[in-house]
Amino acid sequence: MHPAPSLLIFTTLSGAGLGFLFFLGLGMPAPTGWVAFGYFALAYALAAGGLSASVFHLGHPERALKAFTQWRSSWLSREAWAAVATLTVMALYGAGLVFFGTRLAPLGWLGAALALATVVTTSMIYTQMKAVPRWHTPLTPALFLTIALAGGALFAGESGAARVLLIVALVLQLAWWVRGDRRFAESGTDLGTATGLGDRGRVHSFEPPHTGPNYLLREMVFVVGRRHAMRLRFAAVILMAILPLVLLLPAFGKIGAALAALVHLSGVAVSRWLFFAEAEHVVGLYYGAR
Amino acid sequence: MTDLPETTERKLGLVIDLDTCVGCHACVIACKGWNDVAYGAPLSDQDPYGADPSGTFLNRVHSYEVAPEEGPPQLVHFPKSCLHCEDAPCVTVCPTGASYKRAEDGIVLVEEDACIGCGLCAWACPYGAREMDMAEGVMKKCTLCVDRIYNEHLAPEDREPACVRTCPAGARHFGDLADPESAVSRLVAERGGMDLMPEQGTRPVNKYLPPRERDRMPAAPALEPVAQEPRGFLGWLDRTLDRLPGGRG
Image (cartoon, rainbow over all chains, first blue to last red; front, side):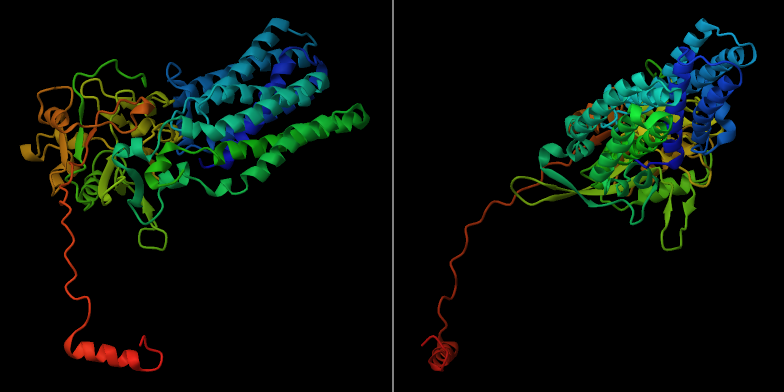
């Protein structure tokens, strides 16, 4: 799949921002006044900034409000509702902390739950795609959730939680890759089933329908980004989990913790690049590609 | 709503005969020609006369070679367009309700005024039946020529999809696949019509008729070689050349 920059920015930043809002909602930490304003401003910059980046992916952004209508069937529509609900509830909760110095705990818990729900809806947009076998696994929401929580813990300064979550995210990321590399073969879809001719012999693409490229090839059969997959996986693991774990050591203090959050975000961006670039859509089979 | 209808009264669709298709691409051109001026935004091209032309098509013809264990390989031309699936994954992912499947005849359509161009439906389709129009930013797909098949301004024989009307080989058939007595349903029953990617669980309405078994030439015994050794003038030349230095003699 084509790793559109808007989608990379969106899933990376909004994931971390929503994870950050989750911890703020739980009162970890529960600052008041201007300190609280700083925390919430950063969380909103990440979450809302990421969400607004996704709008640039649209062919008709001016019709974006229509995306709220199909929550009964569409994960993208559910994501829109969950995101708006999270940002609204957390704004009220944040206003309590910033302007009145009071923590409305139940509102925070609700906001925290909504933040997690938003991450789940985002991940389900990809997980539901049966045509992209690598994404179509319960490990995808698990991975999105732990990465969002790990990023949130880093921004919230919850070092203890961050350490555990980074290790879980690392394990899930490795498991997701190992499983993902086998998913296409396991899906049972090949050029034989795609053409219905598989029981007659070995099918191979003799000539494509057009000499030039097309939307499908650009969007679904994006193979260029896979060239350095192994090196990028290595970089993602180091930046996303291992280096932040080192920077969280007490010896590096507050600056180390701040750096850990930024390094982690860059690692998540690499992981998300691979999430899209390595995902093979079954339509590639019709073109003799993966 | 982008919920799928439980059932549809009719299941209008295509039956494509892989035995008969000659790969002429006339259906591709007829489709582009009709849909360029018909339902919704025209099918745009980018850089059509330049070095890197591409464009929106609702129907594309692939060609595959099928190599059996024994015997010669076979070339199969393979037209592919929207299969108007009963469990259309492209419909349920749509966040705006622009994509829908009609309860009355099962046609899957896009209401372009409601399409935000998020591209999710094209991702959800395993067949590559949907293409984003790069000029309009909305999703395009086969409409089964919904503006032809019910069009009383057209002569009755023209009230079928442009691809079917134009096919010179008679490889494309249009009809109601919910009616077991319809011509297309009988074709499917007689010829073993098949689904593409049945394991994807989309339950396509369109069916493909597999190529018929090819005749096989009986293996003729090899003839005896007519001349083992050259005779006459050639024989003399052969023997003489052999006697020269470097020859066999």
